[in-house]
Image 1 (tube, rainbow, N blue to C red):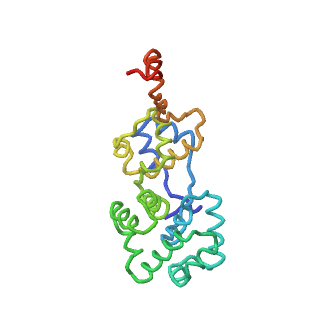
Image 2 (tube, helix red, strand yellow):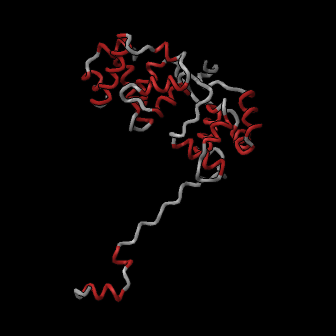
Image 3 (cartoon, rainbow, N blue to C red):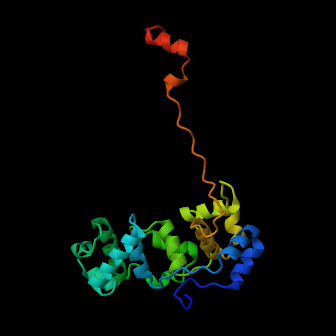
Length: 236
């Protein structure tokens, strides 16, 4: 359940465990303090909002989502199932996204997709079920587990900000499964602090992003000058 502020709930039990397990992360936890990240306990609306937010900015997502709330009063399975694709598009949603939303609403209303059952699945089963939906990939399913179902052990290596935060905390460019094991069973709380690091809340931490390779020189530049001159004269 969310805390009294509607944010992901955690406390000293989780942070003290992580601090004992990882000294570098402990420094970040002490510097940042408690992280407040809003959650959405309504799985249906959370899926809808993730679909709306694909490939647009957070600000644009908020604008479009508010239009949807204004138009449909509440974004429920019944409201979206009864709406036409054109009605959904009218709030600023693409034809493809509107199709994804209709498909999900239809499956929920018909009973083909059991929302309540997902809450009782293991993390792996829930990710598989959610990512089977049109428009929902593994990363989105992981975010739904964290910020909707509030699963305690979600550390997504598919999240660019998490990876950035891990590079900043651990000062290397390669990330390994050992971190997932080390920070379990509180990977979700660890994720909050990696996001905080990536967001600049510990200014002295820098991102050691992978070094970009220099573009390969063209063949002409790799050919000795004398040979290039001969080639230009038609010699072999």
